[in-house]
Image (cartoon, rainbow, N blue to C red; front, side, top):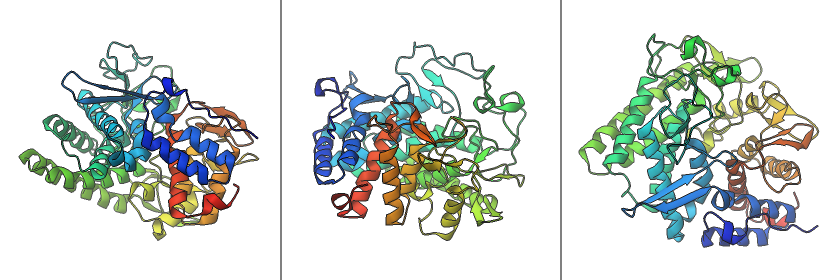
Length: 452
């Protein structure tokens, strides 16, 4: 079978990196499974090929706007994840490095505009389809669903960029002001139920998952050290206000950024770094106090959401951050007993959003509906696995479930991979590429030796 490239013609690609193209050629040439290599060739560069709008401002500073794919808006979370697998190549490619630096700047510009918004337009005059949402919609905001992980994603990219390049020049007074807003927002959302909260959201005539109850305030919460995330990384409303995977992600990225800003040699950096470290410690202790709960079959596991009153919601969702992704995000070691018990729960019938059928098996979620499996969840299962056989199974499933399109989708129906959602979803594509590269590093020779 012939596998013609599905990448845009070079003249129509949004951004070109010779280093990334070289890495693709190298790995593909060594991969025995031609279909898997073809998927990698199509998917890994998809963010660069189709979603990046890069330019230099009049002052010469880089500016990058990265759409999510088939929606012409930039999500803070998605844009970080879309470029994340390219970070190891930044030292080799100055243009790629500049593009990511531009995204670090752009993300913090959006945070300074509204730290409670999750998605933005490049053109501030563009009218969002969600302009009638009952919340404070500022020009340039596409959607204002507050998600803790969006702010964490901004910190994750900034830390990842600086770690891979050693470049701290972008952490100027404007960036530090955005960092202050992030800390202030996370701290504000540590408060319990208030009759005058700093954030509320309601969408008229929507499904329950797209709006907050109690006049847009969300479910009651008791202060316990955790920070609320009114919406999940799926953009669905939380059932209970404290989303544990997002809080775990906050712990990791607050700690990492605390060290960086303390080392800038600026008085504001020292103060903000100490504040971030203190906040991370408080949230970490709260996770261990409030989120470890007993399960009848799996033992003590991490809950997905809690409310601070003692209630817990046991499930896992496909979108990252989720419980399965905690080692990937740096919160728990993959071998840790608590993680292994939690993972066993999430990847089993005990998780109400784990589905299995003729086409595949994996975690889904309420965003698309029952029976729809997210390839992203299968990819993350592979990235966090300690078992070679499980990794092989994950790659095999992903190869079988692209529906003949050569790209990774948002979801597929458990019994028919040709029944899928979102043909152009850059995050899922790039993440798949990250998994293939991860397998090549962790299991040398595996890609060269077998058909998946």
